[in-house]
Image (cartoon, rainbow, N blue to C red; front, side, top):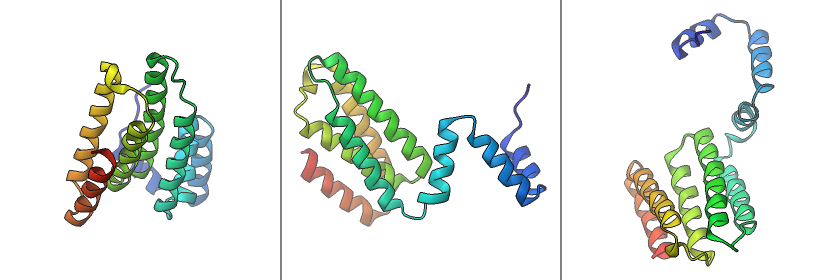
Length: 158
């Protein structure tokens, strides 16, 4: 079965009745957890982006507390899990500022966690990659916001 393009789907959806659209959305939400989470974000939480970012930060904090630091292998697995969660929420929001805030929080938590990530090249590379993403996200923002975030980076990470 060939999947339709976004343009074809958009044209088809514009010709449907509102009741049919509701039924299609509900049916779509039954299939994947991510679809349901995205619909939840768009319907209930998109209007309060700052609150949503705080919720994601709290979730990130809870995941950082669950990290098993007995071996760096487990640390690496946990950090990747946290990054999957962060990436998912960034995809939902579609905002570079939110991405920058969440990545800054991740890097700050990792630095403050006491995990000896300098001893593991894999974890160090993971940290450096997130810093690159952070600077790339900041580079696309307004100059005032860039200045504020760079100041936070200097205070937290350096």
